[in-house]
Image (tube, rainbow, N blue to C red; front, side):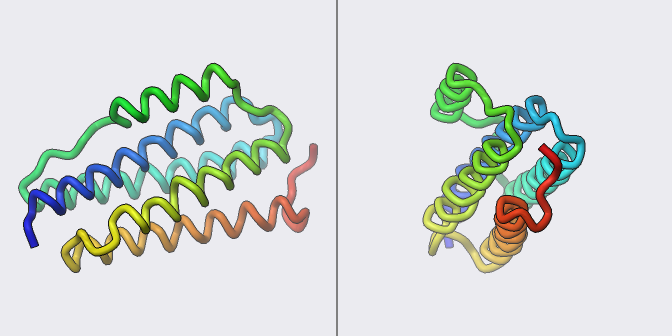
Length: 150
C-alpha cells in the first residue's frame, strides 16, 4: 500500500477528530449540569487521545500530521458558532450523539474503508470501537437511565 495515500486518509480522519474535539469544547462550555460537563470532558479527552495516536501513526509512516480541521472544518465551526450551542441537557446530549454517529463513526468508517494498511486500519477500528461505546453511553443518558439532573 502506498504510504502517501494512507497518510492522506489518516489526515482526513484526523481532521474529523479535531472537529469532534471542537464540538465537545463548545458543548462543555454551554452545559450547566456538572455530571454532563464531566461526561463531555471525558469524551473530549478520549477524542484528543485518539487524535494523538493517529498523528503518531502518520509520523511513523513518514508523513506530517495536520494540526487543525482544514478549510471545510473551519466553515462548519463558523456555522456552528453562528447557529449557537444548545444549553438544555437533552439537546446537548442529542448534539453530541449526532456528532458521534454522523461525523465520528459512520463517516469515518466510510472514509477510510479499504484505503489503509493493516496497522493503520487496526488503530482506526480501535478508536471507532471506543467512539461507539461513547455513542451507546449517550443513548443511555437520553433514555434516562443515567441522565443528569436538568
